[in-house]
Image (spheres, rainbow over the protein chains, first blue to last red):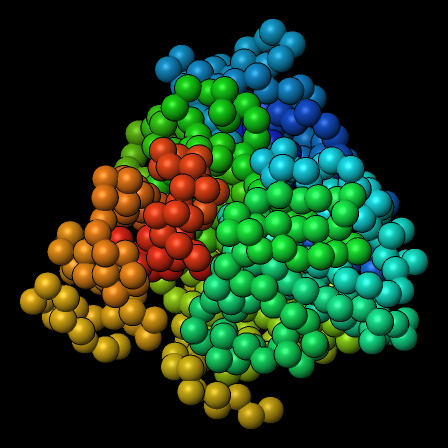
Length: 428
Length: 105
């Protein structure tokens, strides 16, 4: 990546959102420009949550205070952190309007405001029964409430419901099911609990190679599947989950993954977002379709790949290069390939690892070094579980400061992967 | 991949019958896939959804979810179930010649 400085000229770059994407972009850009660009990060609070940790909180495997740090402290000195709520973006005048009435003009804008949880889009979800029988784990508070409920849950029907895609960390609902199975077995009450996963998709594993390798996991773990279940309504009082085609799933404890959308200000910004408030961008350059000087990264962007920390990390490299190119009047590079990798906790101190992009579905093989690994792809192993645990320090100390993780390339590699479903040559 | 013939045109389909190449699609093919799925005739409301599905896929590279359809296609979710019984997002995608809605794995 070429690093260039423009002598004497100062750029003003505004980044909305101090989460994964906003923080790593600010730090990468600050390293490139030094004092030659004014970088402002706006967020409405100063709590940066390590979101992968939320999955572990309900099972007592992670303490809530262990996964929250100051947003401001993750930013290199020289970057301004502005605690404020964004009202709207006016792309026509290149200005971010804040709720306090002030305005931030920009030469380049990065929308990194993540995803919001749209509970109100599902009738009854936050009605009677919320916090008693109906829970979620997508915020620290919700994850803690669910932990307290699970502690005393000894018999009955546990239903995990994905309302609809897209969601952040699309494997989290599967992981929740697997960890719940483990947690209840450890406590000796598994035989008293029915676990059901209700998904709008037509299978738990929808990609052919993953389905052929992992399709049996739900049966093995005795987790029932309810597919093509489009959630219409929740009756928390009676403990009933209802679909649009009038199916009904009874529950004693419902764990919901609500509909996701973009940050509320996106909808109030003329032409910026789609119907859910995500920001449409060129899928390879990350430039928004609304204006040439507006970019989006991470969960906020409408990209046909997973909303996850790893995709955001890989997008960061492309985004930083393209902001430099844009500000220098050069053509953008279309280098983001949709690359994501995710650990999938499967319980009993094991995890799976998947690696894929826009074109290539998750395949078996080894990661990050082809043939060597050490991590096996698309297969359960203890090493993958350790990899997942080891990731948190890497997140705070490598990923957020905007460093590349050694051996982990932004572009996906097919080297050493088994390109056909039958290619299970992995005989370790 | 298997090849099947719709409206006199050979097209490639995946094991579930979804077109492998979106650009092989045309309206006659859509009508035949619909008929196979039990929809005897595609009306204006069907076409509204089918055309929305195609343009959303060609724009974003992903099939719209049922919620997106309900919010943006102009057809409410309840009616989607009347038009495309059982699984509207999946069936409408199949008729529209685009891949089914998927997760990441």
